[in-house]
Length: 224
Image (cartoon, rainbow, N blue to C red):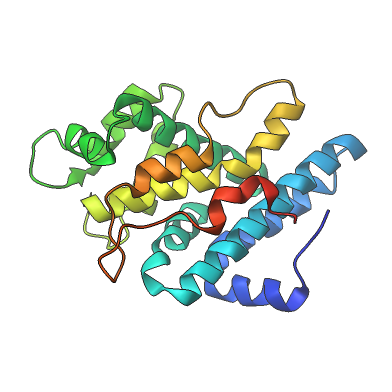
């Protein structure tokens, strides 16, 4: 399994410590498994770290792109080992369920979740939607995902935070695909590229141009 250099790893760890600590705990959980399971687990770990690094490079180049890492860092707070993998999978499944509800545009999904039409999604609205769209999700997990998405800590998710949440979910579950597929089960119905294109549709960058999916669409080739 290809890994980042210690120097590069330390830089990423310092910027988003909760996400990096989660990756460390996943690594520790991998090395106690049987050989075949360890290899699968280490592939997932390596992909998570590399995706973190690639997103960090995007963030360093454009601070407006740091929200994705902030969502994942907040999501990782208080999780441990395989719990973190399960949480990432629940995040991805929730985003896919929202996508299936409104494939035309993510704004339609935002307006659907905003049931009182006040221009933001409250915690009650968000958690009710996740329970409806992703019945297997627990109350604890839906709360964790809400707190991760509420980046400004005002108790609600605005449209910009919602778009960042969708992008984080599209990316977060991709490293789990290989692990699930080796077990004979398809982890995700939609590719990360399709979800990212949907989540970014209509979003404008700092120069007023529509956001584009750059290196992260090739998450399946992160080892190259």
